[in-house]
Amino acid sequence: MDRSERAKQFMPFAALKGFEELLAEKEKMIVPKIELSEERKAELDDKMRSIQKNDIITVTYYAKDEYLKMCGMVSGIDTNVRYLKVVNTKIPFDDIYDITEERRNAFEKPANKDIY
Image (cartoon, rainbow, N blue to C red; front, side):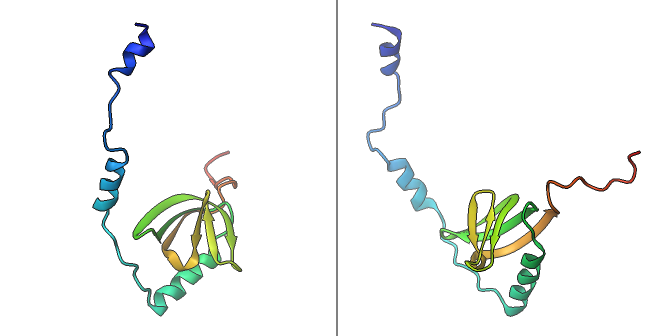
């Protein structure tokens, strides 16, 4: 018996295909979406207006029955369709819970006055 054929007999066997994925889905806790107050919405609106393309941000948003936190570069903002694109993830404005700006425009060099 050649080596590759011999290795196949020691491969793990899943008798119930997809069972582990189903269990993981069942264990997931469903979190209800938090309704934001008018003050909080105004605060988020101010933060959204200050964000520009290529800024590094951390955004907390609601997706698929849970809150997710993502840090990355803003690759697009569409105020007409009302979504924020961080790297390759499109996040609707209505699903955003919090935004923190980490660094203004990632392509600009930071101003450091100590360098000669």
